[in-house]
Image (cartoon, rainbow, N blue to C red):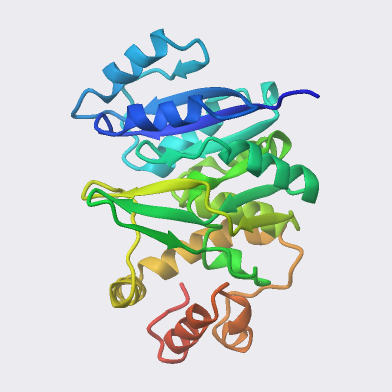
Length: 294
């Protein structure tokens, strides 16, 4: 039986404290021929130098040219997606710089992809803190008809895609670079595949530890903090702008009859977010005009 080959795209920035542990957890993946492509955004620490040192000891690591200032994880991931020869691999996975993958993360994801004929895969994660606290972060609520316009498919660092899916996205990205490069990468990948009737699973089995610390670009908030943060993003107009970016990019490919219209959204609110209370929160935001259609 052929051992699948996986290209892991790792975007890094000021990550010298944690990146070596992240890379080690990728290199020890079971029953996988793994190759790591690392793009280091112009950093203030020794991330690039450390990655160069690790690369010398591992022939299956490639370090992209250093010196670019991308300014966000999304643009760094888009750079990786553009530059890597996807046709050389069976699957493509995304990786942050500071997490810890369980040894069966990729093999379990690929088993789910093959057995369910999936076009995309993501999963729940276990958030971890320096004081040893751990908490399950559940994103695997049932998919809704239009959820991809309003949220991504779980943390992007859990994404695993068959090569053909990422190749389709790569072509889309290159052809729409001016606008696509400003959208959130994990959200856009999920929306692009779902809008074309792609089969996507958000697995309830967490296969990685998602580190929480002060320098996280993306972290999790829980309880009242989470809703206060969400309310702030909606009131500021940030969330509606991000939704509009996704809508403008994928709606023309969408087979679903979706309209970015207030009353259409209110009538279909239950189909907009996977978690029921998030749908209700969005409904209230629409009725009170806190969420404004861009």
